[in-house]
Length: 148
Image (cartoon, rainbow, N blue to C red; front, side, top):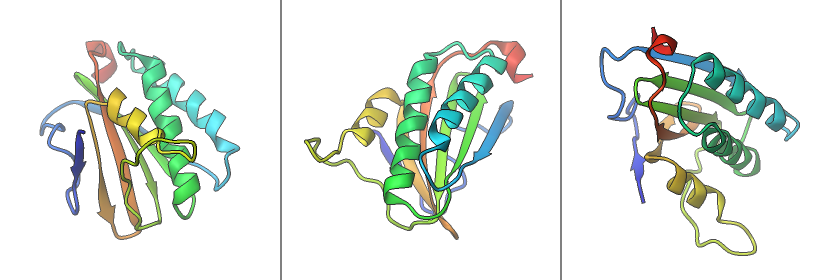
């Protein structure tokens, strides 16, 4: 398990100071109608950034984190994508203080965060004043032109 709880920390340790970073943010409605739009938004952003990693893995992490925010969170979720040299970070925030956890997978669920745990280099959460942010970092090598 690569869970990193970051209560009060702004970012994970993988975000190096001085690193060139690009990011995009999308605010969604409180229903599942926004999930296909979020997946397309993610694909477009990764294409613009010339992301060289497994795009489908990033899209799957986006889907799982947003689905969890809709099922277990409160308020309208916000998706934020950040890319820097060597990694892409997916963050989903919602207004619930309930923190994510790995559950034993079974017929009633528990598969989503296990999948995030397998696909990402690490994942975690941070608590903020309005709820929480759940994040996952996937390692890759984007082209240098996308970062500049």
